[in-house]
Length: 304
Image (cartoon, rainbow, N blue to C red; front, side):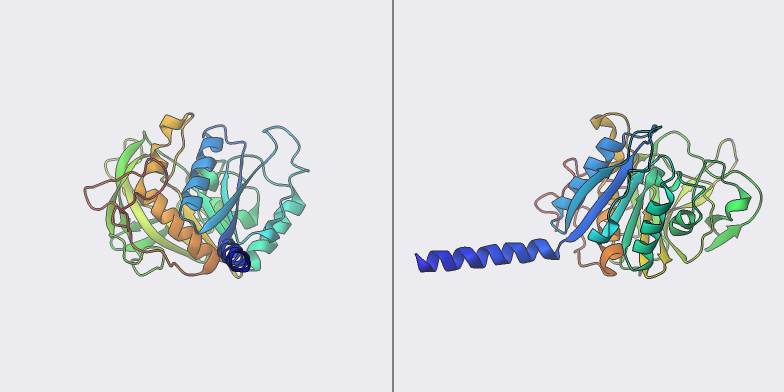
Protein backbone atom coordinates (compact mmCIF):
# COMPACT_ATOMS: atom_id res chain seq x y z
CA UNK A 1 0.00 0.00 0.00
CA UNK A 2 2.82 2.39 0.92
CA UNK A 3 4.59 1.54 -2.33
CA UNK A 4 1.41 2.29 -4.27
CA UNK A 5 0.98 5.66 -2.53
CA UNK A 6 4.63 6.50 -3.17
CA UNK A 7 4.27 5.71 -6.88
CA UNK A 8 1.06 7.75 -7.06
CA UNK A 9 2.79 10.74 -5.51
CA UNK A 10 5.74 10.42 -7.91
CA UNK A 11 3.40 10.23 -10.91
CA UNK A 12 1.45 13.28 -9.72
CA UNK A 13 4.63 15.26 -9.19
CA UNK A 14 5.92 14.24 -12.63
CA UNK A 15 2.66 15.24 -14.33
CA UNK A 16 2.52 18.53 -12.43
CA UNK A 17 6.09 19.29 -13.40
CA UNK A 18 5.37 18.49 -17.04
CA UNK A 19 2.36 20.80 -17.06
CA UNK A 20 4.35 23.54 -15.36
CA UNK A 21 6.97 23.36 -18.10
CA UNK A 22 4.44 23.92 -20.85
CA UNK A 23 4.14 27.36 -22.42
CA UNK A 24 1.12 29.13 -20.95
CA UNK A 25 -0.70 30.70 -23.86
CA UNK A 26 -3.66 33.02 -24.32
CA UNK A 27 -5.41 33.45 -27.66
CA UNK A 28 -6.90 36.93 -28.05
CA UNK A 29 -9.72 36.81 -30.57
CA UNK A 30 -13.08 38.22 -31.65
CA UNK A 31 -14.97 40.72 -33.81
CA UNK A 32 -13.49 39.78 -37.20
CA UNK A 33 -16.34 40.01 -39.69
CA UNK A 34 -14.24 38.76 -42.62
CA UNK A 35 -12.93 35.59 -40.99
CA UNK A 36 -14.37 32.78 -38.88
CA UNK A 37 -12.43 33.78 -35.79
CA UNK A 38 -14.15 31.22 -33.54
CA UNK A 39 -13.19 28.26 -35.74
CA UNK A 40 -9.78 29.68 -36.54
CA UNK A 41 -8.94 30.19 -32.87
CA UNK A 42 -10.11 26.68 -32.01
CA UNK A 43 -7.84 25.33 -34.75
CA UNK A 44 -4.88 27.28 -33.37
CA UNK A 45 -5.63 25.95 -29.89
CA UNK A 46 -5.67 22.37 -31.22
CA UNK A 47 -2.43 22.87 -33.16
CA UNK A 48 -0.64 24.22 -30.09
CA UNK A 49 -2.01 21.79 -27.54
CA UNK A 50 -1.61 18.72 -29.78
CA UNK A 51 2.13 19.41 -29.77
CA UNK A 52 2.10 18.91 -25.97
CA UNK A 53 4.27 22.02 -25.61
CA UNK A 54 1.50 24.50 -24.80
CA UNK A 55 -1.54 25.00 -22.60
CA UNK A 56 -4.04 27.36 -24.20
CA UNK A 57 -6.88 29.61 -23.03
CA UNK A 58 -9.10 31.50 -25.49
CA UNK A 59 -10.31 34.93 -24.39
CA UNK A 60 -12.74 36.57 -26.81
CA UNK A 61 -13.43 40.28 -26.75
CA UNK A 62 -16.93 41.76 -26.42
CA UNK A 63 -18.92 41.60 -29.64
CA UNK A 64 -18.47 44.22 -32.33
CA UNK A 65 -20.12 47.49 -31.30
CA UNK A 66 -20.11 46.66 -27.59
CA UNK A 67 -17.98 48.55 -25.07
CA UNK A 68 -14.39 47.36 -24.81
CA UNK A 69 -13.97 48.79 -21.31
CA UNK A 70 -14.45 45.39 -19.67
CA UNK A 71 -11.79 43.69 -21.78
CA UNK A 72 -8.81 43.58 -19.44
CA UNK A 73 -6.89 40.31 -19.84
CA UNK A 74 -4.23 39.55 -17.25
CA UNK A 75 -1.36 39.12 -19.69
CA UNK A 76 1.09 38.58 -16.83
CA UNK A 77 -0.29 35.06 -16.23
CA UNK A 78 0.99 33.92 -19.62
CA UNK A 79 4.25 33.29 -21.45
CA UNK A 80 2.70 33.82 -24.88
CA UNK A 81 -0.18 35.77 -26.40
CA UNK A 82 -1.51 34.69 -29.80
CA UNK A 83 -3.50 37.40 -31.58
CA UNK A 84 -6.21 36.19 -33.96
CA UNK A 85 -8.28 39.34 -33.85
CA UNK A 86 -9.92 41.76 -36.25
CA UNK A 87 -11.91 44.33 -34.33
CA UNK A 88 -11.94 47.58 -32.39
CA UNK A 89 -8.83 49.03 -30.77
CA UNK A 90 -8.42 48.04 -27.13
CA UNK A 91 -8.95 50.65 -24.42
CA UNK A 92 -5.95 52.60 -23.16
CA UNK A 93 -5.26 50.59 -20.00
CA UNK A 94 -5.42 47.27 -21.88
CA UNK A 95 -3.03 48.70 -24.46
CA UNK A 96 -0.61 49.77 -21.73
CA UNK A 97 -0.85 46.38 -20.03
CA UNK A 98 -0.01 44.63 -23.30
CA UNK A 99 2.85 46.99 -24.13
CA UNK A 100 4.33 46.29 -20.70
CA UNK A 101 3.87 42.53 -21.14
CA UNK A 102 5.80 42.53 -24.41
CA UNK A 103 8.44 45.04 -23.30
CA UNK A 104 9.19 42.88 -20.27
CA UNK A 105 9.81 39.81 -22.39
CA UNK A 106 6.41 38.32 -23.17
CA UNK A 107 6.09 36.40 -26.43
CA UNK A 108 3.57 37.28 -29.15
CA UNK A 109 2.30 35.48 -32.26
CA UNK A 110 0.22 37.45 -34.78
CA UNK A 111 -1.84 35.46 -37.28
CA UNK A 112 -3.07 36.40 -40.76
CA UNK A 113 -5.61 39.27 -40.66
CA UNK A 114 -4.47 40.43 -37.22
CA UNK A 115 -2.05 42.79 -38.98
CA UNK A 116 -5.09 44.78 -40.14
CA UNK A 117 -6.86 46.14 -37.01
CA UNK A 118 -5.82 48.74 -34.45
CA UNK A 119 -4.06 50.93 -37.01
CA UNK A 120 -4.53 53.89 -34.65
CA UNK A 121 -2.42 52.20 -31.94
CA UNK A 122 1.18 53.23 -32.64
CA UNK A 123 2.82 50.60 -30.48
CA UNK A 124 0.78 47.76 -31.96
CA UNK A 125 1.97 48.83 -35.40
CA UNK A 126 5.54 48.82 -34.07
CA UNK A 127 5.01 45.30 -32.71
CA UNK A 128 3.61 43.81 -35.92
CA UNK A 129 6.07 45.70 -38.13
CA UNK A 130 3.95 45.61 -41.29
CA UNK A 131 0.21 46.13 -41.66
CA UNK A 132 -2.50 46.35 -44.30
CA UNK A 133 -5.75 48.16 -45.16
CA UNK A 134 -7.66 50.34 -42.63
CA UNK A 135 -6.36 53.50 -44.28
CA UNK A 136 -2.68 52.64 -44.01
CA UNK A 137 -0.48 54.37 -46.57
CA UNK A 138 2.89 56.13 -46.85
CA UNK A 139 2.32 57.93 -43.54
CA UNK A 140 2.62 54.54 -41.79
CA UNK A 141 5.97 53.50 -43.24
CA UNK A 142 7.47 51.83 -46.30
CA UNK A 143 6.39 48.86 -48.36
CA UNK A 144 8.81 46.01 -47.72
CA UNK A 145 9.50 43.28 -50.28
CA UNK A 146 12.28 41.14 -51.76
CA UNK A 147 13.81 42.13 -55.10
CA UNK A 148 17.18 41.50 -56.76
CA UNK A 149 18.35 39.31 -53.86
CA UNK A 150 17.69 41.85 -51.15
CA UNK A 151 14.91 43.46 -49.18
CA UNK A 152 13.62 46.77 -50.48
CA UNK A 153 12.17 49.49 -48.25
CA UNK A 154 9.93 51.39 -50.64
CA UNK A 155 8.65 54.78 -49.44
CA UNK A 156 6.58 55.54 -52.54
CA UNK A 157 2.99 56.68 -51.88
CA UNK A 158 0.13 54.24 -52.01
CA UNK A 159 -2.38 52.28 -50.00
CA UNK A 160 -1.41 49.20 -48.01
CA UNK A 161 -3.01 45.82 -48.49
CA UNK A 162 -4.06 43.57 -51.36
CA UNK A 163 -4.97 39.97 -51.93
CA UNK A 164 -6.42 38.20 -54.92
CA UNK A 165 -8.43 34.99 -55.02
CA UNK A 166 -7.26 32.21 -52.74
CA UNK A 167 -4.71 29.97 -54.42
CA UNK A 168 -1.77 27.67 -53.66
CA UNK A 169 1.62 29.37 -53.64
CA UNK A 170 5.30 28.71 -53.04
CA UNK A 171 6.99 29.92 -49.85
CA UNK A 172 10.73 30.71 -50.00
CA UNK A 173 12.86 31.05 -46.87
CA UNK A 174 15.09 34.12 -46.78
CA UNK A 175 16.70 33.64 -43.35
CA UNK A 176 17.38 29.92 -43.33
CA UNK A 177 19.51 30.07 -40.15
CA UNK A 178 16.80 31.56 -37.95
CA UNK A 179 15.75 29.04 -35.25
CA UNK A 180 12.16 29.03 -36.52
CA UNK A 181 13.22 27.88 -40.00
CA UNK A 182 16.56 26.16 -39.48
CA UNK A 183 16.56 22.65 -40.89
CA UNK A 184 13.24 22.96 -42.73
CA UNK A 185 13.00 22.71 -46.53
CA UNK A 186 13.80 26.19 -47.82
CA UNK A 187 11.19 26.11 -50.63
CA UNK A 188 7.77 24.58 -50.07
CA UNK A 189 4.18 24.66 -51.25
CA UNK A 190 1.49 26.23 -49.12
CA UNK A 191 -2.05 25.01 -49.62
CA UNK A 192 -4.81 27.31 -50.94
CA UNK A 193 -4.84 30.61 -49.01
CA UNK A 194 -5.08 34.38 -49.25
CA UNK A 195 -1.68 35.81 -50.09
CA UNK A 196 -1.33 39.28 -48.60
CA UNK A 197 0.63 41.83 -50.61
CA UNK A 198 1.50 45.54 -50.52
CA UNK A 199 2.23 45.44 -46.79
CA UNK A 200 3.73 48.51 -45.23
CA UNK A 201 4.46 49.79 -41.75
CA UNK A 202 7.19 51.01 -39.37
CA UNK A 203 9.31 47.91 -40.17
CA UNK A 204 11.64 48.58 -37.23
CA UNK A 205 13.64 45.74 -35.68
CA UNK A 206 12.13 43.42 -38.29
CA UNK A 207 13.58 40.20 -39.68
CA UNK A 208 11.77 38.88 -42.77
CA UNK A 209 12.01 35.09 -42.64
CA UNK A 210 10.08 34.04 -45.77
CA UNK A 211 8.35 35.44 -48.84
CA UNK A 212 5.90 34.39 -51.56
CA UNK A 213 5.46 35.79 -55.06
CA UNK A 214 2.24 37.68 -55.83
CA UNK A 215 1.00 39.71 -58.81
CA UNK A 216 -1.16 42.65 -57.74
CA UNK A 217 -4.26 43.34 -59.80
CA UNK A 218 -3.56 43.69 -63.53
CA UNK A 219 0.14 44.34 -63.14
CA UNK A 220 2.42 42.64 -65.66
CA UNK A 221 4.71 41.34 -62.94
CA UNK A 222 4.64 40.80 -59.21
CA UNK A 223 7.11 40.73 -56.37
CA UNK A 224 8.12 38.57 -53.45
CA UNK A 225 6.04 39.62 -50.47
CA UNK A 226 6.76 38.88 -46.78
CA UNK A 227 4.69 36.06 -45.27
CA UNK A 228 6.71 35.19 -42.14
CA UNK A 229 8.71 37.64 -40.04
CA UNK A 230 9.81 38.53 -36.52
CA UNK A 231 9.99 41.82 -34.63
CA UNK A 232 11.93 42.68 -31.48
CA UNK A 233 9.99 44.90 -29.08
CA UNK A 234 11.80 45.75 -25.87
CA UNK A 235 12.73 42.39 -24.33
CA UNK A 236 9.85 40.71 -26.14
CA UNK A 237 9.75 38.68 -29.34
CA UNK A 238 6.96 38.84 -31.92
CA UNK A 239 6.39 36.27 -34.66
CA UNK A 240 4.03 37.19 -37.51
CA UNK A 241 2.54 34.53 -39.78
CA UNK A 242 0.15 35.99 -42.36
CA UNK A 243 -0.83 32.55 -43.64
CA UNK A 244 -3.88 30.82 -42.16
CA UNK A 245 -7.12 32.25 -43.55
CA UNK A 246 -10.22 30.72 -41.93
CA UNK A 247 -13.49 30.85 -43.86
CA UNK A 248 -17.01 30.78 -42.45
CA UNK A 249 -17.38 27.05 -41.78
CA UNK A 250 -15.21 24.04 -40.79
CA UNK A 251 -14.69 23.07 -44.43
CA UNK A 252 -12.96 26.39 -45.09
CA UNK A 253 -10.06 26.02 -42.67
CA UNK A 254 -7.93 24.29 -45.30
CA UNK A 255 -5.26 27.00 -45.09
CA UNK A 256 -4.75 26.10 -41.43
CA UNK A 257 -4.67 22.38 -42.27
CA UNK A 258 -1.49 22.97 -44.27
CA UNK A 259 1.45 21.32 -42.52
CA UNK A 260 3.65 24.29 -43.40
CA UNK A 261 1.33 26.68 -41.59
CA UNK A 262 1.07 24.44 -38.53
CA UNK A 263 4.78 23.75 -38.19
CA UNK A 264 5.87 27.37 -38.67
CA UNK A 265 3.19 28.44 -36.18
CA UNK A 266 4.45 25.92 -33.61
CA UNK A 267 8.09 26.78 -34.08
CA UNK A 268 7.40 30.51 -34.12
CA UNK A 269 5.30 30.26 -30.97
CA UNK A 270 8.00 28.37 -29.08
CA UNK A 271 10.66 30.84 -30.24
CA UNK A 272 8.56 33.87 -29.26
CA UNK A 273 7.95 32.46 -25.78
CA UNK A 274 11.32 30.85 -25.06
CA UNK A 275 13.81 32.29 -27.54
CA UNK A 276 14.70 28.83 -28.82
CA UNK A 277 13.15 25.99 -30.80
CA UNK A 278 13.40 22.44 -29.46
CA UNK A 279 11.07 20.78 -31.99
CA UNK A 280 12.42 18.18 -34.37
CA UNK A 281 12.13 18.59 -38.14
CA UNK A 282 8.93 16.75 -39.16
CA UNK A 283 9.05 14.22 -41.97
CA UNK A 284 5.72 15.45 -43.38
CA UNK A 285 6.81 19.06 -43.92
CA UNK A 286 5.99 20.21 -47.49
CA UNK A 287 8.69 20.74 -50.08
CA UNK A 288 9.16 22.23 -53.54
CA UNK A 289 6.20 21.13 -55.64
CA UNK A 290 4.62 19.23 -52.72
CA UNK A 291 2.02 20.42 -50.19
CA UNK A 292 0.88 18.32 -47.22
CA UNK A 293 -2.04 18.57 -44.81
CA UNK A 294 -2.65 17.70 -41.18
CA UNK A 295 -6.43 17.44 -41.28
CA UNK A 296 -6.78 16.89 -37.52
CA UNK A 297 -4.42 19.74 -36.66
CA UNK A 298 -1.79 17.37 -35.32
CA UNK A 299 1.17 15.44 -36.58
CA UNK A 300 0.53 11.96 -38.00
CA UNK A 301 1.97 9.13 -35.96
CA UNK A 302 5.06 8.89 -38.17
CA UNK A 303 5.70 12.61 -38.54
CA UNK A 304 8.99 12.61 -36.64
